[in-house]
Length: 283
Image (cartoon, rainbow, N blue to C red):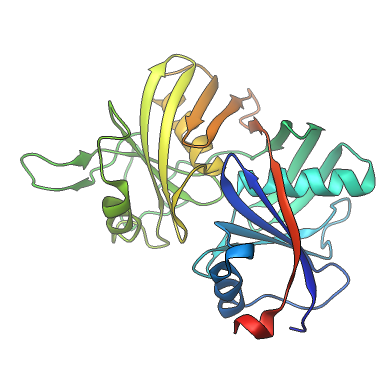
């Protein structure tokens, strides 16, 4: 890739996002370049959203999503809110469509503090998540960490929200060393494509508190797809209503699991700064 590629540094509830627009170019960021970009303080990210020319009619762009470690993610709700805000500002349109590995997503922009992403339909089949072995009921699977007779965490719900998620139900999301436990569970053999690992506390029928170890990125202040997964799994376990506020370390997101099975996520974004990527200098 050549030098001089503009970028925007943004965040969705503290989930660090870098946005790069490569539309009109055939360039593709490779894993090493993504890691190099993430290594620079000015362009550090949890996820990098790279816009490419649209493949599907009616969409604004095809969006590749990179994690800090250079791996690609299928979905990033906080990142899509950032992308939606930027493109709405450029085009003047408030209703937008983008294609990702997870499919075509609708984004509706009311203001910088109120952007809604249709995160699609959650999947719960063990093959769809995917899991390495069959589980008939994925509301609870047999998975634990720690001593057999007194596990630290056990019996998570699992779902695919564009990417794999495991949600452990706890009384206090801060009572566990997620920075230590997360990597072990992310890479557990039951998850052949690794998984996002969340700790969820159901506060009420309309409120969940969540912390997440994000696959390929680590501890994060906010993970939109993890919050989606937690909201959907809570409904499946009859713990909450279909409209729920999920409070992450970075703040709250509002979710609605509609009757057509699509989950809508609404929240804010922030613009931090703009800059230019000099990739040769980071290689």
